[in-house]
Picture 1 (cartoon, rainbow over the protein chains, first blue to last red):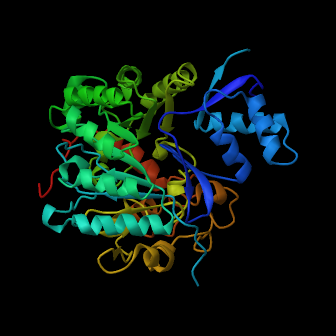
Picture 2 (spheres, chains in turn blue, purple):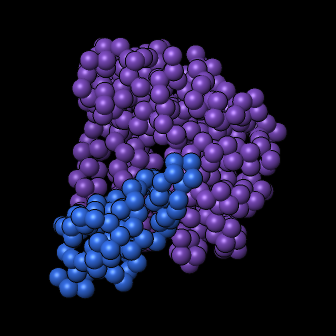
Length: 92
Length: 363
């Protein structure tokens, strides 16, 4: 699990866009396409190489109910595994 | 009744079969499309429009060598304007710094560069022309341009022993991904199978090298390893199901559920000059022929692995058993597995290795 201090960043060559056909946010990358739900799309948009996972969770909590930092960390972890985001760790 | 289909995610646009390289395992069909029969620029623009309306988000500009099309820049601009992820699949031959810069400005998102072998000598022997230095240069231009790079190497008996060198070369080229794909035997590769089939010893030597490199390079360069299916007990999950995720448009406008599908001669192939991609994707006989699970026979029908491998490859079933609805014969559960074992026995270490038939249009 990525720590709350981890700073995720969208990888080079990854495109985030809204697909009118599916009515969903999507992430496009060399390997394929990820269709995102609204929460995941907000997380991806905040993977800017500046915001920590903990701060992403705080920002999300302003928008959505029931945001758990651990869930955000797990989602980020999955995005790392799919090579959509990279992590810069500022503090182990 | 048609099985339900989801919208496709990708379009493989084989813009041309013309190519400066002559690799004897080319995935294009033996009967290559001549220049005069290629779709026009307007046709391709319409195909991209229809693919996007259908749901495709990735457009893979491939061939042959897509750089052989004079209208490539215009097609890149168009694909990008639709919001698609634009992937350029190239041999690197003909990719100058200026040309790549222009294509990047127009919206190429990612470059996939083929590498035939780890050394100049090996690479150029397989490619049939002096291409190695062009590839090294092309990789450098891609890096200069700041585009992500995937290096793609097809593995076979002639280069498997150099796999560590291929991995090192891809690292040196600055690739973020390396696709090491064992040859799949259709078209040209089927014709050259006795030259290409790797031995069990070669694979046993290569496998741990690949796995160690995957570990060592984690986070820096992703290595995708496509297995040599003749040597496996289970088939590959070909296309993740027929007509499920991607469609291919051949240079002449033929619309294919998989790039090799013309080998299934019993399949009625549709063309973009006659029908829309929408109609072909959802309603054609060819795209519905092997969708879902209903078409399956045993052993696939009652097999829990059908959700994993979708019965394997229809083209391989057709080529080796004469019926595309049979279980992929590489499967250990297939009643036709003995055909694959016989091929391995006779072609893996043939007494007389035939000469490689080089890929040429009308050659």
